[in-house]
Image (tube, rainbow, N blue to C red; front, side, top):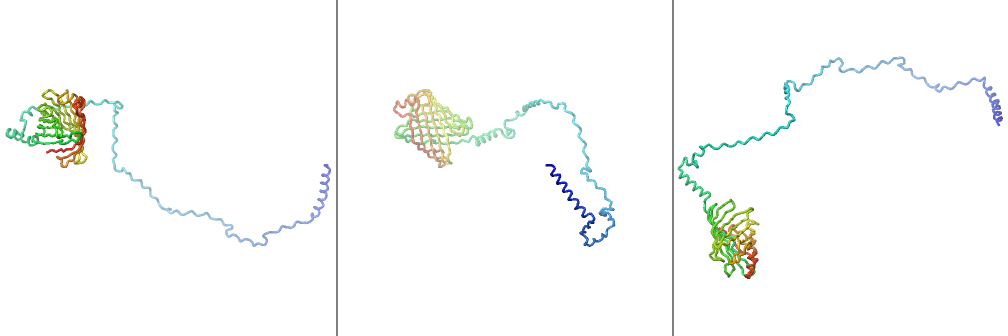
Length: 355
């Protein structure tokens, strides 16, 4: 199989050699020039010339002499600098807690000189007649603080409309005197319309101001009813408590040795300038039983009322209200044994005034 390719190679070589020998005596033609028909280029006018180097730009400051720069002005020129403060010596107590210095002892005022008490009580007596000055001082005292005045007041003049017989009540007072001392007259009582007067009393008291708001009172009370002709010693206190609550408290010691007490508290609440709502409470106590008056020991009775009055003028005011009265304890028991009611509720119609 290998012999066949070799044979074909020898044959091919024999046929290629005669073709080359046919062109051995022929010269090769020259190649065609592509620019043969073109005009020659123009000659360069600068051919062979050497180009000078470019001239440098002219300096605008050439030949000028620059002045030296001006130094900046010193803001402290002409000022004399203070000398540095001398160094403080080191504090030997630095960092130590100092104890508080004791408070200085108060300096006592020296007593007045003895000569200060040698003269008269009133310096004017050294210049004027002492008797004339004494009379002038009494007149001044009387005009400024000892003027005598008086007043009449009717706190309650009212009728009670209730079950059974309607009743009536009066509570009037009057006083005469000055700012410190006064003479008081008080009268209270009640009864039934068309019937007998159940209670009636009159008090005559000496009143003295013990504080700017309260007067101490002492005197006598005389009962016209129910024990006609029975007298009492009276010791009381009347005035204004906190928030203008009017208080009238009295203790009574009868000539028969009966000790009783009465406390009245009332307050005026202004709804308008003329319309006034007045709550009022009255309580009575007895230290012992008093069978003839139907009074038991302890708290014997209390009354509570609420009155609404209209002050047409400050010293005259009609009113309407409602009241409740109750006899309690032994007093209530005595009333029930007598066939009386121990409590009652009533409609109140009345008037109060003063002048």
